[in-house]
Length: 177
Image (cartoon, rainbow, N blue to C red; front, side, top):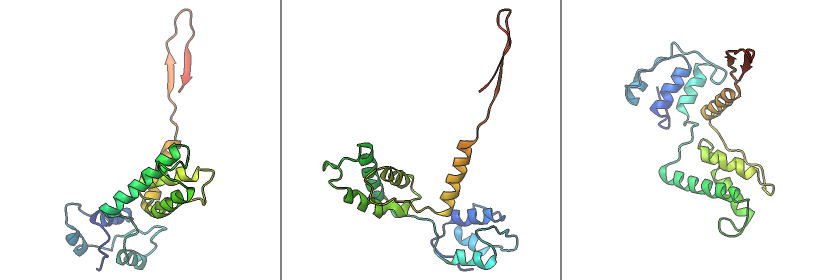
């Protein structure tokens, strides 16, 4: 089986785990590739059959992985945009002298949306009333799924019942927090 080198060991293990096949994480990537078994795969709406599964593994990984130098540049630009937005979007020459410079920076980093700083920089840039265009960060499927799950968890409310013991003067008090 030919697997593109951009797929990491962790990616392969999680992909097979999502499709119902458990792989021992102690094995090396080469051992995992040599021992892959496609018999017990369970497909979902994203990968519907074995040919799509093979195509996914043969093509480069959709996950975004910048190298160390790229990540340093991306984080610096994201921090500049965050600082600029927290400062009230002022173009006084210390961070940006024009809105066009901020737009150029955000357009150079929005493709790395898997990084939380880039997502925050895009959100803050979009809050600017003078922003040139609305910029949405590009997210991989796994990060989008994780963000959706976190949003669901944050929306869930759990109420608890509190009963206070009464005294002669006060009746029983029941409250829900």
